[in-house]
Structures are given as structure tokens and as C-alpha cells.
Image (cartoon, rainbow, N blue to C red; front, top):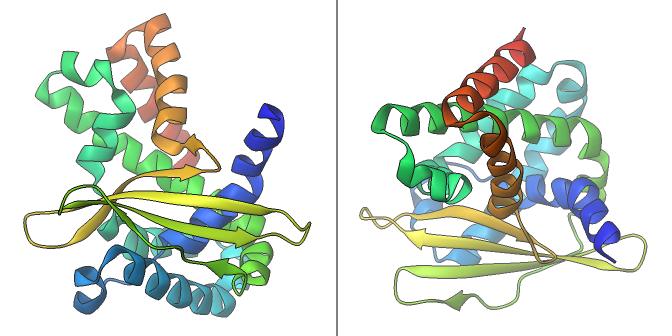
Length: 216
């Protein structure tokens, strides 16, 4: 069962993450309730993907531009990065924290583009199979938005978005959970194991080098 869940996360799960995490940056959408925002950004992303999926396959830079323009304005990267780094965040100095936020930003962008190239057709085919259960609010400025995506196999994938309202009234995402697997916790486990082996400074240098090589 654990292996099945990991496969769902790495394949259909990543496709689904693309499907529901790529909003527009319109002021109206930014102020909407979490459920409305998820519904709105899903429709807009599918439209963009249908129009550009061939270009994304041919040129990954098209995918990078979509990620930068459509995803990142709606992610709370400092909070996301803090969750991912976990106990190591508390030990890091200000420069190291900024370093990690910057490199994690780049690392996550590459993950999304890989998913775009690999699963664009699946995303489009699943676009009409998404339902949006009611949002579960945790205090006035924290919420979990839910989506359920029906798969061609007859099963489904549940995606939950941990969101909070920032000081300017904008809802932002700081973690995604796919069928019980937290994106932040998955990266935390992987990164923490590496930090334990080589130390925080060396890990940051390695992450920077990995991103640099990927760009070139």
C-alpha cells in the first residue's frame, strides 16, 4: 500500500499538483475564498496547458515561465521553506535561510516543469473529473482546501492544500498533501537525511550546484 501511494504521488499526484496549483495572478482570484480560488485556478490552468502543452514539450523554458508567472505568486515560500527545513531552520542563520528559500524556489520549479513535460496529457484528460468538497477552516485565517480527482483506472486521488491568509488578505499555499503524503514533509525527510550526513552548509552548496547544473 505504501508503494502504491508513493507511485500515485510521483505520477498522478504530480500531475494533479500541476492541475490545481497553477493559478492566475488576478486581484479578484487572490481575494477569493480558498475553495473558489482552487476552482478558478484549475480552469485557467487547463486552458493554458491545452494551448501550450506542445510548446512545453519542445521547450522547458515555456514551462519555467508558466511556473514563475502562475504558481509562485500563490505560494508562501518563506513559510513553505521553514516547514521543509524543519529543525534545521531554527539552527540556520539569516543568510542560510535566504539561501535555502532561493534554492528551494529553483528546485521546486524544476519539479513542476518535469511534471508538466511528463504528464500534460493526463492533466488535460482528468480536468473534468475534479470535485471540490467544502473547505475546512482552522481559525479565521487558516484553511485546508480539498479536491478529489477521479482517475481513468476507477480510483481517485485526494489533494488537500494547507493555506493561510496573509496580512494583505491574500490566501496562499504553504503545503500540499496528496493521498496522505505531505509535499513539505516528504522534502523534509529527504533533505534532513542529507543534512545529517554532510551538514547544513554543505547541503546548501550541493543544492545550489544541483540547480546550476540543471539550468546549464
